[in-house]
Length: 624
Image 1 (cartoon, rainbow, N blue to C red):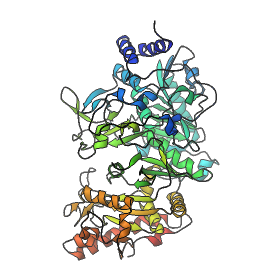
Image 2: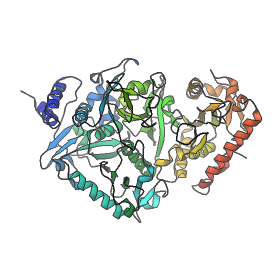
Image 3: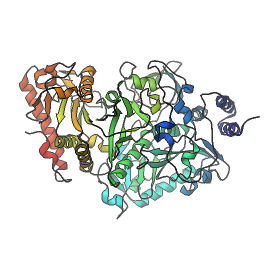
Image 4: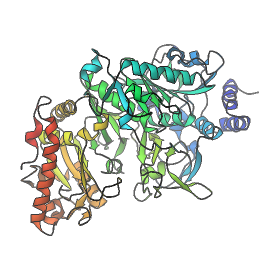
């Protein structure tokens, strides 16, 4: 006779097909399958056990050894799945209050194994034969990245968000009436479905500022994505009395036909109503809209905490002595590569907070680019691609659907999401003490920036607000020579307050905790792109190592006459001549001209921030 838990599991599995049900039940008996638990939620809300190291099994594996899903204790620990069926399924799942009442089957917080079975049964994509294990892969259609011009925030006149949001091109305002129409359209769509997927999870590894997030999706792979990316509840008791701080209704298969009447940009709409604690998504299947939408909200909420907290678009790791470090940088600067350090544990690769206790991850997973991915260049990411990871818009080749990361005919923004426990050397608590080093990464294609420079606190504010890197030929259509790119706080697209507000928070943290700030350039040396050569990863890694192990303090310094930062005379394992970029150019006068040109770009970009915030940081920029 089947156990009660097995009967629940069979009921869930039969909802996705008879043959699949049998396979699922067999998987239930195997150690690789997670069990179901519970049938409803209720009681008082509690924080998930993920925050306490004692609730995890410390688990490592040989770095070059593939593993089956059964080898992941963290995978098995995620066991909050429940399936609701019948006329009251929506009420039991907690979404009837949204107006969604018709679906008779709600799959809530499915296990990784169940999600895989649903994805296959629903024919939502293909199974890729990645080197370290089969991985589900999806195609998100014409949208292979975020659609920033279609992101809107409701301007509720007289509200807190109205007063605090930095309205403009990033935070485009729309009206409550437009949101209400779209909300009703989304609800109507879900009420036309027989089934839906619901995920209840958390954003932020510190319970004091953590937010409870609910997602309502049409497809299993979308629940898979947010299951990978957000903090998961380990068992149903973690979700007792769950009342979401924010809900996202993702009706991606629908479009806004009335977008012109609504005053929007296109039939795609990603609309947030902060006061109503809800967002709706139309017309885009891209998984990143779910992730980055919540990140934008964390950028709104945390600076308004008491005391204010600092949300950051950065990666973070921690050493054996508890010394954490932050890596800010735009795409292509080495943020993921450099934070993955065999001598340090990864806290997270993209989104973090810094509060009175230290730094903490917002997420429960990673979302990495796959372009030109190889085990040699990105071993941690490459080995993380196996069962429970999910590929997006990655080309497949051959009868076995082998991923081809060098085929970018679909997009250069191919992605993989995976739970953080896929990384060998991850930091289980997901939070650490106050960082001692803040590293601003740049990929300077003009050949001007040094491989490493030390910043005074005020200079750190200037360069944080500037958020500089450069695009080179081939990264975007139409680019034939280096183009300077400035993205405030290394994440302008996700900032809801004025950038100077985040700079003030960073300034307070640096001063209070005596943290040091650095520029590290992974770009070109000896001339601009096309003339010089890109910095060897060994050189960049040596610069970071010198910062983190403290050996950089043993050198002498010279000040750059234009940018004002301090250049080290020597660093272990780095050619002394490389440390001063002027020495690497065939003609120093050409370098002087290029440095002045880049400095002018910095100054021009910073003009828009003059007069905003408590301090005029323009005085700490380059001197012309």
